Image 1: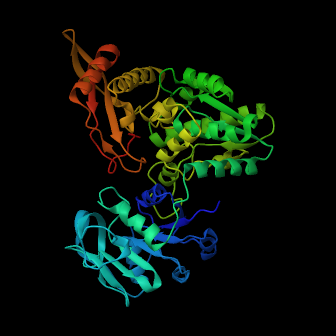
Image 2: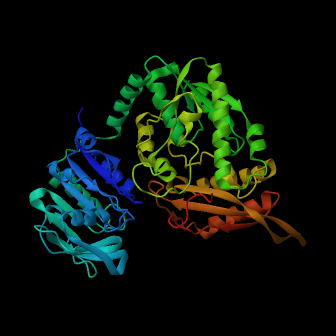
Image 3: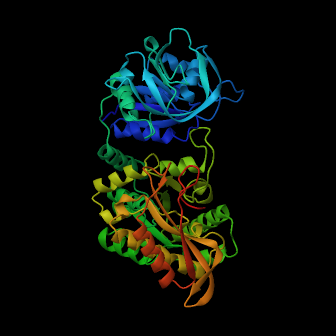
Amino acid sequence: MTFDKILILDFGSQYTQLIARRIRELNVYSEIFPFNESIAKIKDFNPKGIILSGGPSSVYSDSAPLINKDIFTLNVPILGICYGMQLITHLFKGVVHPSDKREYGFSEIDIVSQDLLFNDLPKKFQVWMSHGDKIDKLPENFQIIANTSNSPYAAIKNEKIKIWGVQFHPEVVHTKFGNNILSNFAFKICNCEPNWDIGSFLSDSINQIRETVGSEKVICGLSGGVDSSVVAVLIHKAIGNQLTCIFVNNGVLRKNEAEKVVRIFRENFKINLDYVDAEDIFIDRLKGVTDPEKKRKIIGNTFIDIFEREAKKLGNVKFLAQGTLYPDVIESVSFKGPSATIKSHHNVGGLPEKMNLKLIEPLRELFKDEVRELGKELNMPDDIIYRQPFPGPGLAIRIIGEVNKERLDILREADDVIVSEIKNAGLYREIWQSFGVLLPIKTVGVMGDERTYENVIALRAVNSIDGMTADWVKLPYELLGKISNRIINEIKGVNRVVYDISSKPPSTIEWE
């Protein structure tokens, strides 16, 4: 089946992934290409519409990311968002200058001209701005659609050549009718049909996996988390016993996790599973290491070493399957645009060079919520589908400082208390992530009239849609008190519990 598609060109905005997600929610397929993608590849993609993302650059800068102007000759509707709109203005000989007053946060726009982009929307509504530059002069033949008190050109268009631009970000939840605006662009302006969904993705993926793999063998790094579990079941559905899953107990897993994974995949899914107990190897290599990036690299490299060893035992294996997601890729490397690297991920970058295996990453273009939907399509149990995200480097990056057996045992028990109490309160599936962090400090306490000098556990609970942004959860005081009391009373070596009330950005979800 042929799907209508919208292409997003990425100029480095932290919100670019959200644009793709919002378009897919409309059942229109979307992909992200780098801003400097060739016209030939864009034509080959055959989009019914193109969106130019925002970005951190200024169009008048010598290093500003630009596009080939031939894109405007494709006779395809184009929507520029923030930097994308300023770039359109710049390329069509309008004027963009630094603003005297930077506009960041909530603003109210006034719709001053009837247009399909704002079809059936109020004349005034709240939007989210994030820009330091503004348009001082429109290009010839462009007209104003909307303005704000600080931006005389908050939305513009040149309908004759099918170009629209908005200074605000319709993709973020803070813009009140953002989804309506993107819907109007996709359906009213681009005339897309809503003919793509996760069911379509599933059938396409199965066909693609079979075509790619043929009769060769595949190994899959299984952690028991949502991503790797869905990958394993998806590939098993496509090629059956050609798949062998390798589950490496890296010693930084949660309480009883290894036993659960082995039972579920061997007994429930009937998948070939090779269990490797490598706890001592990982912990020995992590000894004395405190830098979080070094921890990630050690765990990633050790994982590769073990995989190479296990793959040789299986004979002539050609493919390695991984549960890499869109946010993994974007946060690890400037993959599809000039965005900043935030942290590396253990399952992104470098593996094909270190291992003599070809990668299969069927979830690479999906967000976490889409992966859960795919799990439902595969009839996987809710316990796996709705499991909260768990980092590849595991508890190693939730222990600030050195990782050793004693500290791991403390954090395992604390984490188990946190998760079990949140489940008992009926909040587990309402929260994106909830976990404990073992801090590298000790504090004075009093237990049984005696002075103690013991560890601190930080409790972290956040809500998010896709992991790109997150807000801390306002857990009930009664629940916080219960968790704190249980951790301090039941876990030897802890005398204080604190609650992290930071959001992303500026903080990350994990502490390391």
